[in-house]
Length: 476
Image 1 (tube, one colour):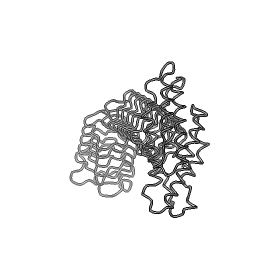
Image 2 (cartoon, rainbow, N blue to C red):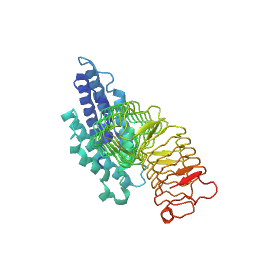
Image 3 (cartoon, rainbow, N blue to C red):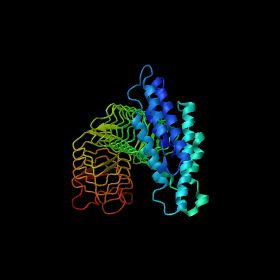
Image 4 (cartoon, rainbow, N blue to C red):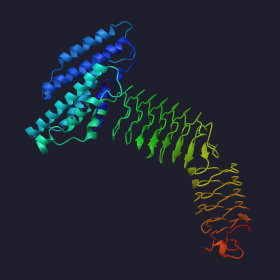
């Protein structure tokens, strides 16, 4: 229930200019008085078709005119009179559609809606009074009035029973947030958002620190300079959103976050945690701060990482390809090669490293689905427990490489140099190995081409088990 107040909070968001300006302060006060005037009319006159806000409108216009004549004038941009009216009316209409979505068939349905409407009006009056009293918003501004808002959704149930179906909270949230998408500078710290669609919302400079944005859609939203510290991003969608200079320190994205095609240039993501399936694909991350960030299963394909320093970040199962610019720093044992990040637990699909020199890399537990290392130098590379299914190593130099417990189903080692390689725990039954050099291979518990284990043979090797199309050389 705590979220429904977000909509009315949004209505006066355009007044969030520097409050030291006399014009802005006067407009803030005028807006608060306008809300209270409308709410007073709504609470005493039902149904809404008979509402008359003419007096409220005249007072608002006069107050704005006086404000704009104050010494120093109004900063640009500042709250606009017609825009303010439109947003107030849009919020009222959205709530009205939720309270009474269909023309009433029974009188009880009309009475139920009227009862709820009065409670909502009482809430708005309370909120407007708070604005007048405090004018400059504080964290506790809306909490005193919240109980009235809760009652507004459930009032009438006992009296009207089946004729007073309680609207779903998230329907109200969606309607209000859609009508009031201008949240520039809004203070929404600690708010728990539900499955709200805030597509294209203007949240420039908004305070969302400590908020729960789980399952919220913020596609194409503008969050430049927003404060999102300690927020929860569980299945949150920031697709194509702008978060330039935003502070995302210590955010928690356990369930995956989408920053697909988002702009996070200059954003701070220090000590944040992004869980499995978090996507930064095609995102612009120029100069973003990833100090101490945990990235587990994140995707960076096609992302612009210019000026990014990952040296203190934690990488696990990172996917990257076609990076236009490599980052300036990476965690220990990670490298950027031809627009791809390589290191322990790297997760890549269809990468091509043909003919490159990748000697000595630690690629433990990495996954290279259908990758191509044809003719590549991989001397001493650590492929322990790596996923090499369908990988092409034709003609590659794997001398001294460690393939302990690697998955080599349908792996192509034709003409590869595997001299001195460690094949402990490797299954050679389904590999292509024609013309390969297996001189001096370590055979610990290797599954041979004929299905036997190397440890059950004398000598303990797989040499001699290969049929036609086997290696060119093989020895213990």
